[in-house]
Image (cartoon, rainbow, N blue to C red; front, side, top):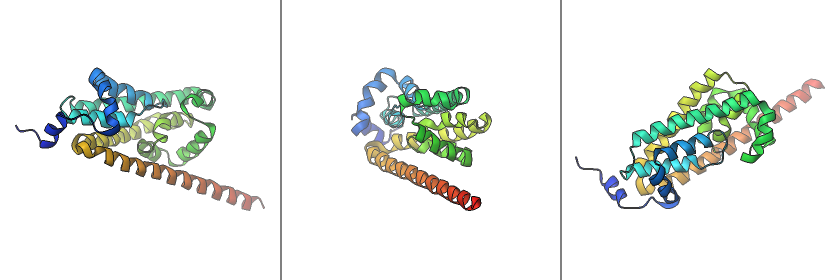
Length: 217
């Protein structure tokens, strides 16, 4: 069977743009690199898991990895990583998170904002957080800290991870050399969505304080 022109062309070229820096890691470690980056990123360690996943998908498109295995390993690592984060938050509580969170850029202010939003929106946040930089890394930790029921967290976490992994593996595998532009545009969209979420949260908190002041007078 004749391979698509996209894959044939990709096999003779290095990975495009920023993804090229991961080529050696993927060559040496393969699926283990995918598992490690996504597992540790998903409980707060500042690793470029999303970029590595796209690079692995491009690498699979070039015929060096199996795209189905990349997706399966990425999904399992992401779910397990978030569950470790959930366990840290649930068992250690806010005190533990604040004590060690500074080493992975989890500040008290960020935790406050995220906790309020989690308590109000629960499962929807767990699902959407996959696509928002910052929330993706804090997802499990915050859910555990606010004592979100584990089964509910697990269901939304698994679903969100499946959609997130499917999105980036498909784009990386099919888009070829255009993936850098697509990834950049999608990242801008995700950042914009995160800013809108924070603005909504700030507006919501301001309205609550205003109502409380009005009720006390």
